Image (cartoon, rainbow, N blue to C red):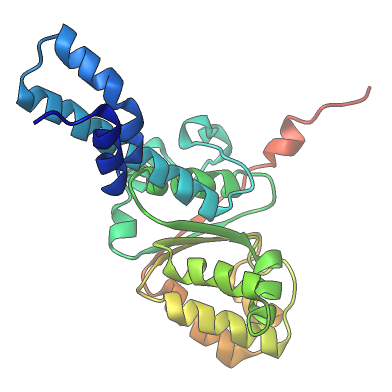
Length: 248
């Protein structure tokens, strides 16, 4: 049986192995020059396809996550996060809390590294095959309010609800009316024990009631968020202030 290169490539593409199809001529040349066995050739071919699919999945999940920037945990300045030890950071990086649907709450003034830490953990989760969604509270509220009539909002909220990890940045930076608070509660209620949530905020839970304007909704939200959670307080001075550039 003598099958042409074009036919083999067509069959691979039909089997949704388009990346391997492109590289097939190179694999055949290497197999001949290095005297691969059939098993070695097949192993190399499948390993390449598996790696490319993993890379493409990570690329897709990074696009869907909508991080404002990418900063890794290795770049985090632990000196500025006085309450977070190297051992604790290592534990967080292992993502066992994500497997157990734990929530993380990072509290402290602006500029201490809360968002950097949240994004770093989000990147680790994506590299381990998890779906992540990042959104600021300022972006989330308009999305929730426009979901009924905007297709774009519907798609973005669908990805948020289907994510394994949802990062909500700058929680409670502004007051909400009762309708907004109610919509936010329904989102948290949907995510409850389905997904892990990372929240960053410069206000403590004791202040949330005032900003949500409804004590009943506040209690319901806190009940779901704090049921399985770890709260980390960062009280150091802002990195941006310490490392600011001066004109004079």
